[in-house]
Amino acid sequence: MQLSEQEIVRREKLEKLRVLGINPYPADLYTVKNTSKSIKQDFKEGSNVVIAGRLMMIKVQGKASFAQLQDAEGKIQVYFNRDEICLGEDKSKYNEVFKKLLDFGDFVGIEGELFTTQVGEKTVKVKDFTLLSKALKPLPLPKEKDGVVYDAFTDPEQRYRQRYADLVVNPQVKAVFIKRTKLFNAMRSFFNDAGYFEVETPVLQPIPGGAAARPFITHHNALDIPLYMRIANELYLKRLIVGGFDGVYEFSKNFRNEGMDRTHNPEFTAMEIYVAYKDYNWMMDFCERLLEHCAIAVNGTTKATFGEHEIDFKAPYARVTMADSIKHFTGFDITGKTEDEIRQAAKDLGVEVDNTMGKGKLIDEIFGEKCESNYIQPTYITDYPKEMSPLCKEHRENPELTERFELMVCGKEIANAYSELNDPIDQRERFEHQLKLAAKGDDEATEFIDHDFLRALEYGMPPTSGMGIGMDRLIMFLTNNQSIQEVLFFPQMRPEKKAVAVSEDAKAVFEILQKAEKLELVDLKVKSGLSNKKWDKTIKELTKNNLAKVEKTDDGLFVVVV
Image 1 (cartoon, rainbow, N blue to C red):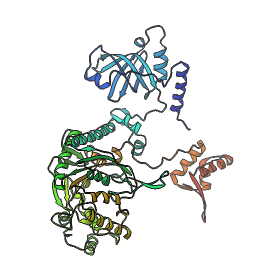
Image 2 (image 1 turned 180 degrees about the vertical axis):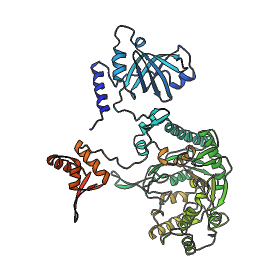
Image 3 (image 1 turned 30 degrees about the vertical axis):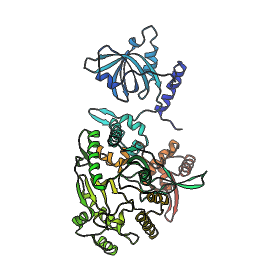
């Protein structure tokens, strides 16, 4: 393991602490009686307090020093005075332990007394301190000089990989996740107050169902069967409606083995709710009341800023049919058109399509390309063609459509809802049609028929409305984050490239090579300034560690960055 100079120094301090008889990682309970927030709120001069947290800043000034302590609630100034801490002749706890062996990032417990400095800063005067955990790696703390911040921990890849450090040094990041929890709590209380029941359904499923997506596959050894990580929990929740629950909901972790981008992660959180004896019109009213409630709970207002837009989640929301939307933005009326006519229209509109796409997929592509991005304020798109909605009830006025809506915000879908299909014969036919589309090459059509779900429907399911909300995407809108990775504690990342330990000579030669990416072998050797023996050793080191390679061409031998 290669250590930086600071890391080596901190390990030396660790050993010195142990020599002094101080356990840098004590097991003892440390009873915390106060927090930085409670101290500031209930501040009383001269009160005794016991706090714990990280030392985030230390200014040593002879026998009196100031530091900053950070706990889960915020930061507070602490004052270390040698004579207050060391009442007798032995001043080593201050002179040796505090001044020489503590670092920023260390966890300490502090017993002290409250006072206000001459500049009005609420401060804890330290009477005693206890080292609770020694930090061996320096935190990536930003530095400020003349109002300018340097070395801020802002690189997204580093922040996502080291979320633990990100949360410590960037307080605004923690605020996002606090809002995320507020959203879940607000939604949960809204459902509970309405009388609906929170449930859990299987994550490992024998058949991936309830959505069109590529699943993750695993194998159960004891049963000797393949199992699929769930792509949706819809079919299980409907089984519970069959079983006699009037309203059920679940916050579910779903997994889809598909691409990653700023709005997609292979693991994500969805909320799905199903309520008996309701339809999609009722669900639209319910949804907008829900989101209005959640927006206020998270931000204190129905309004939220997202990029350049101000979104207002105050009910009611505009409602536009799928056909009217496409007609409005393209001039093409999909009503009553055949698959071939729609395919031709898509081509004429410059939408990329292929022969594997059925009618529903073609319409979806036209809408996605030409319409979706225009809906900034919350807007319901309703009455989807039947081919796009295999689990949705046929429209009561038009048998070619379904009773479905999607809620669009800033050009993205955040909710999807149906009057649920409860006709088992119709459902079987829809599943069979999906199989034909899958055989045709449509990778979003399901390849499975869930016969157990059909059996459940045959026992009878009451008229039901269901809705799914992408929770990660919703909190993005409520916290003004353009990337889903910002609202997930630990987003999925590519494997981290391990730093290769090479000699100083190899580093110097590699730096020369990097600037040019490709150099003639002789030229690189001359520029390196190394002896023949050192050069041979260095070039072998670079090629062995896959940092560079030697290529033979008609023009000679070249060294290239790998």
